[in-house]
Length: 168
Image (cartoon, rainbow, N blue to C red; front, side, top):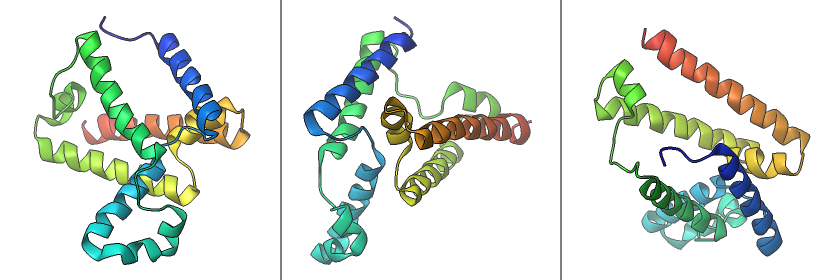
């Protein structure tokens, strides 16, 4: 199988979201796991005083169910790629390589910058893209639908700028 059916995947994510609400009474989301990870890293260098910061009192630097969800996403992606027979180690995606070459550092820096912006936006807004895009739209929250539409519009605009304007 070269691609998973988007209908099957969408239904699977919906069932996962139902189970998450049923078993943990929490929506699916990932950005808090990254905030907790940054706290755990800071705790390595600065000690237990990190946990006394107001931000980390709210989001304790510890492994929780969201952190395990992110870990599970990585494992699930690996298993999915292996099952579909498409797994390969690739540092630079083909589309990027076609426009900008195969150098790893520029691709890494652009991906890192995009991730930092997404993370900052998610923490600044008090929510994350997956939380809004999956859990919020599943609950028919108007704010989540606005965010989801904005994410697609922003993603299309960013791809246009990167691949049509900068790469041209």
